[in-house]
Image 1 (cartoon, rainbow over the protein chains, first blue to last red):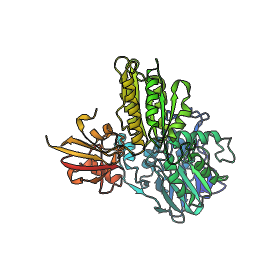
Image 2: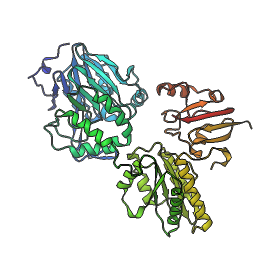
Image 3: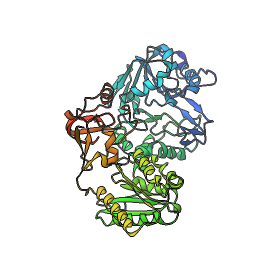
Image 4: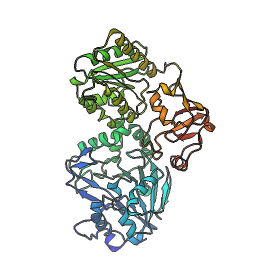
Amino acid sequence: MNPPPSALPGHTRTTGGYEAIPVAEGVHWIGALDPQLRNFDIILKTANGTTYNAYCVRGSAGVAIIDTVKAEFADEFFARFEQVADYAEITTIVLNHLEPDHTGALPELLRRAPQARVHISHRAPLMLKGLLKHNGESLDFTTVQQGDRLSLGDRHLRFLHTPFLHWPDTQCTFLEEDGILFSGDIFGCHFCDPRLFNDRVGDFRFSFEYYYQHIMRPFREHVLHALPLIEALDIRLICPAHGPIHRDAPLAYVKRYHQLAAPQLTNEAGQHAKTLVMFYISAYGNTALMAQAIKDGAESIDGVRVSLYDLQGGEVTPFVDLIEEADAIAFGSPTINGDAVKPVWDLLSCLTQVPLKGKLGAAFGSYGWSGEAVGMIEDRLRGLKLRVPCAGIKLKLIPTGEELAQCHAFGQDLARHLTGQAAFRVIDMTELA
Amino acid sequence: MPKAQVVFEDIGVAVTVPAGTRLIEVSEKVGAGITYGCREGECGTCMMKIVSGMENLANPSMLETKVLQEQMAGRHNRLACQAQVLQGQIVVAPG
């Protein structure tokens, strides 16, 4: 398939001031610049904006579009595309990730190129339907899996199944003959510089690390699963969906992901012990007494190492790092005005930054009137997908010696669950709160 | 009311439940490791393994069957937010 004259090397046709930028022979960046953006997806600051990277790949038997852009930037995307190909030439649209910042221009692209076949991960169909349902639209598409290949004639796209980086649908696409990895959000960052290539733009190291910490860190295990698939490729260029294209030393960014996905802290407890990190806050010292008794109880069980922290004396960020490496976490809070207190929620609201699945959780606290805090914390822990094996313990005002013994037993019970020593139980559903 | 027993293998707890109970009504309260997302049979997060007693669960609905297919589930998998206990003993595990 021959390119239009405007796509030939040395020929640049501008449309509305937007240029398609050559990435390799027959491969162009046709994305959009968003320098004014200051907040992305609510959770990320973007100090100099971002880019929505989309690419056009020309093969002898067809043209492929890799990702699109946010809807508000569709005109920019189409203007750049029109410099390098005609809509009738598009045979393939690959969506590496269906979040709206990469699929906003899809409905209009499909209207202009109805013959194009959409290729998505096999985990993506429900999301694609969700994106298009408001227009009453539907379309046929092809789902792809790890290792599937697609021919563009003299060039071939190979798909890498890389789920949860950072949505279930995410995948990477590799242009085999050129060694170009279209990586989706992996190796991306929110950094806007029209010079586009990593060896020409400003210093984006902070943005790269910040993006990893907020987008990829919760999926650390999935990063570690995906990296071997990527490292097996002969990569010469990494084209992410946001931020600079990694032309200079692309493998350095792969290596950096390995480092970032490693634990933030080494496991102080060693391989044969389980770690329980306890956080408490106490208005009159009663919840603190409970915390100490629970700690003593847990530590009386072999193979458990307990750390106890007063939330009033610490910062959220290092506590999040501790929780990431812990096997179990427990929160103690008094009930004030029918709620757990704010420092507890402040920490609990930050835990989506780290992987939590498989950890145990527990709650306890002293109260004056009604004691709702414990149940609310337990609900939050379950919502975060922690396992809460022991019903939380709440005590009215000042604990007695007998009640502190209950706390001690609670700590032992939690530790037994943590170390796999809990006895088999047969109970009736009515016994469950 | 007819009863059934659900054994949560990962935590070593057997719970006697009335027939008709959905797994989601029990598993979190007992502290089992099955985790939930949408809780409405759409996201597939709560896919669990039926170690034994599949025949003691109600058949999956069309919705559950569709989601299981999309999640590339095996024949021993069900969604805990949808699976309904009918009788006998069912042994379950996360994943």
